[in-house]
Amino acid sequence: MNRWRNRPDGSNWGDFGPSDQVGKMNLVTPERRRAAAAEIREGIAFCLSLPLEYPGYSERLSGTRKPPQLFAPGSYNSLSGPRNHDYSEVICDDGVVLCTQYSTQWDALSHYGRLFDLAGDGREQKTYYNGFTADDFIQPDQDGGPIALSLGIQNLATTCVQGRGVMVDLATAFGSGRRWVGYEDFMSAMDCQKVTVEPGDFLMIHTGFGHAVMEMGEAVDVDRLNGTGAVLDGADERLLRWIADSDVAVICSDNQAVEGFDVMGERQGTEMLLPLHDLCLFKQGIHLGELWYLSELAQWLAENRRNTFMLTAPPLRLTGAVGSPATPVATV
Ligand code: UVW
Image (cartoon, rainbow, N blue to C red):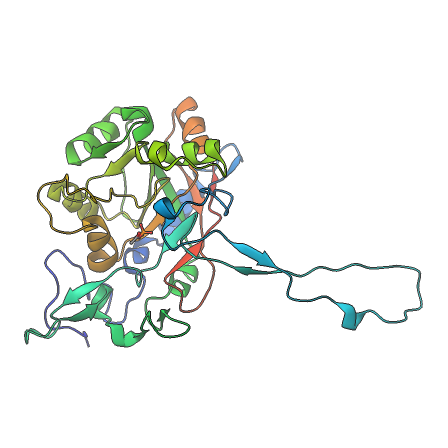
């Protein structure tokens, strides 16, 4: 039974079943995986992850998200003892304190929700995709939170995240400066690059932001980054409708949030800070990948007049997490 009486306008809640926790990943069928495998013609693979310590840290850029910190949890001394051989073996372990969404990452469907009246009785509560509520979470201010008892990233991990990637290269279409890309721009880039998407495809958006991050290394220039690369305009209703109707399974970009953050209130037409997150994570169950490194793949695809490839990009199977680092691999 559905856990809602009202579902938000433009949502697909319930369409994949009342307990569904992976949204449009349901469209990645065995047939779609076979189509993805057919994209492997050269046998060349690309690593689509930034080094996880990138972007270089600045509070202005990353807020409370911090780069990974490695530590040594201990040694194997307890294993060393007299042995009847001449080897001196040296073994290291390490641990890591990791903000799951600092660098190349997946957003789980539990990453973004909003206040919503599920029962139609005027009582709004913190709600996520498919009507899961904050009751399914340990609240962020509790020790160890937020732990997503529903919609955690482990659900995405068990789908294996393997399918056909389709690249739209906004850096080639519009250059490397900041540009808000709405429906018209997006369609013209797709037309020009002869990109077509099928239901269940993984939509990749190259903006050049990841390339700038790589060039800067640890000496991050936030003002320069803020002026780099296209961002999708989540206030453009036609773009949002196309995303929902196209039935892409996920959207991934080399920029920070796929869409632009309208912190200065420049955009007309929406009161929300992250309307594309609202459509994708809250209403449609479309996972978002952010800060991927797409530039080498985009260049190869352009040189070889292609825009499709096989993508393999599982997150960590980290139960209860609202995001995860990833080391996505494209094979052409
Ligand atoms: C926010 O910054 C809220 O999210 P994301 O990492 O998905 O852009």
